[in-house]
Structure formats: structure tokens, C-alpha cells
Image (tube, rainbow, N blue to C red):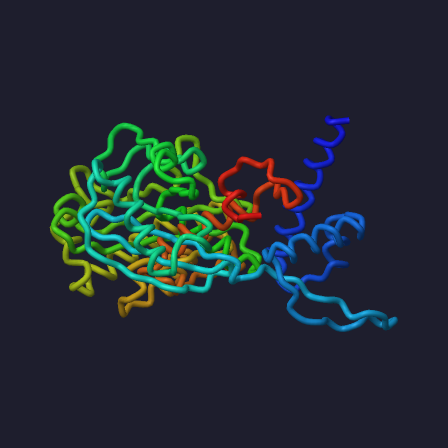
Length: 388
């Protein structure tokens, strides 16, 4: 009997997760449409939706139009955007950015500040930044979790930083274990460019994004960044079939130009001494962007990507980067029909990584396979953070 009860609870938790994921991906969907999509009994939908409404995680928005045969008008369902908030943090070498967003991706608060980040202080710095910002948001009662984005080779599934130039880290750091010793609030960590991709997946899910590239371009003016790599950092977030691709050893998206020259501290063929001037030399900026475009063209045309996002500090400069990328993609294309790839800015600018880190956490929550709304047996910190 106990086994049967356990199986029943598991099935309810699985159905609840499928229902909430469907509502998240399809705002203003009706109960009838959920049942049709998931092939579930109407009674199951009615019970689970009622429970989710009672818990406050979803809300009824408005009445739809009755069908041709008349009858009751459908009620539209959506995620309750004000159920809680998520914090996203970008950790840099000499500064950080932090953002709070609601469950539909609306920015509630944002700030950036200078701070020298070291390997020894990293864990405590992340905790201090998150909890100080949470106090500015009114406390941690409605805080669902914290996402952290930074440069490096990061196993985001296990929360392990394998290697990081900004932290001068050459041996693994178990970020998740260190955080779990200090707080029960879930913290996730990911590579900065990958976080940007998760942000697009989480907050632009209705746009049909499936195969795309996020190009993160950051210009750093601090002494450490300038001396170590010329202050210009480029990384890719790669999404295939709506999943962020991290590669065999989590190095997917780590970038060095195909035109890179031996001995150059920067990632490009442009000499280190010249790349340092990219933010104040229009000729170097255009040369830099065109070299990036030629590298990106190979990815786009080889993998038949349909979208390229450009984000980070480069959005603030007076140069039509999407046009240059598009030109290079066409130059690399070998067929008479035009390549089916749209290039655009992300519009997030300096918020891109922090916003994406918040999206990473939200994406993990709403793609969970179990959501036990009828019991408290689940031990997944992300699910527990929803306070169901």
C-alpha cells in the first residue's frame, strides 16, 4: 500500500511539473489547452491548477473567447510574476553587477559597483553581495534563489568552478558545497556567456528560440584586466535544440580567434598593445568586430543557427555590429539562397550576464521534472525554494 501511495505522489509531482512548465512556456493558456497538450485527464488538470492557484504560483488573468458552439469562456492562466524574485550576479575581476527580476523577467532593481574579487574572498563576497541586495529588496522572505555568472570553465550542473582566469583558479573550487555550508537558499553558478543564453531561453521562451549563439563582448578598463588580456573578453553561449551546450569538459563557448597569433595575450590577431585601445579607437573597434564576425560566420553556417545575439559592453558603441556580422555570415555562405540567420543586440547591455544568471536559475526551476505541490517530500533545494 505504501508503495502504491509513493508511486501516486511521484506521478502527481511529475504532472504538476509538466503543468507549471506548460503555463510558463505558454502564458495565457487555458485549462482545456493544457489538457490537450499534455494528454491528461481534465480532473487532473483541475486539481493541480486549483492547488497551484491556492499556493499563489500561478494566477488567472482574463476570460478568453468562447468557442464557435458557445459555452463557457475559457480562463487564461499565467505564472504569478510577483510570487517571488530572483537575484542575478555577475562577478568580474574588479567589479560586480547585481540585478533582481520577477518571474517573468522584469527588472526590479539593478546596481553595479567596484570591488576587487580574489579566490580567497570569492564565496563570502558572493554571499555578501546577494544578501545585502536582498535587504534592499525588502528581505529574503520572497527570494527564490541566486544565480551567479562569471568567466571560466564551470560545471554548472554540479556547481564546480573548474578553472578561472579572473580568480587565478587552476584547481577546482566546489562553489555549491561551500555555499550550502552557509545558507539553504539555492545558489547556481555558470559561465558568463552561457548565463546570457539561459537568460534568452528563460525570458524569451515564446519567441521560438531553438538554435542560436550568444556573443558576449566585454570591455574592462581596470589595471588587472588590461595587463592580463588587454581588457577585451569574448565568449559564446551556444544553444542547440533549446539546450545550452557546454561540451565534454564544459569548455564549449571558450573563444580564441582562428586568426590569433602566437604570443598574443589577447584573443585575436590584433596585437595586445592595439586591442587595449579598442574602446577609444574606431578603426581598431571595427577591425576587432569584423574579425569576430568572420569567426562567428563559421559557427552560424556550419550549425545552421537561426539567431545570433550580441550582448555586453559593445552595445553602447556607435558601430552597427549586427550589420557587420550579417555581412560576414553572407560572405561565408556557399548557397544561392540567403542564410536564415537574424543578428541583433540583446538590449541588455551591462545587465546581460547578471540578468542571464537569474534566468539560469529560473530555467532550472521551471524545467524541473517534479513539483510536489501535494506533499513536502521533495529535497531539491530549487523546488523547496518555491515555498510550496
